[in-house]
Length: 209
Image 1 (cartoon, rainbow, N blue to C red):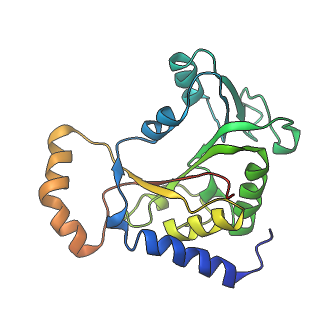
Image 2: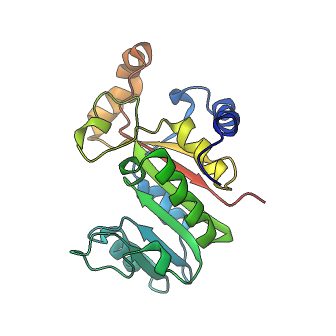
């Protein structure tokens, strides 16, 4: 699927909006790994895209000793299993990419999602994390960011790539008292200003049947 059908993207975006009418309808989890560790189990084959120092992979391998973890990153100064997605010759039960897609243009992002769809097994899970645009400065903290993906836009692209309507989560972790204050008192001001304290949105999807 190429990035040439704005009407298709619009239809998918509207489906995401029907499920999550506003950012405040998206549930909170503390960390991306809360979802990742819940999905992964022993004997799975897992791919991390944009793996960097592979720290998430080490944590997975410490928890699940029988998983087959593989990593992909274009940075050849790091130690990876793959440096090009074209070199991957197997399928996976779980693929995740945290803080990566915002470094790509919309066309590049859709191309990546298409390729990941082809690498995922029929009942596999894809996790994509990106800065939450309702946070006042989260996206703007990195000069290498190319595209600000609102949650419904990213969800629409995932559906264009052949994924089912994704589940979406907001990622927010903080010190106990500050977290309590924001969730119970500060939330009133945040909602009034439409400014979120969650810095990341995480989209989770399976291949559409």
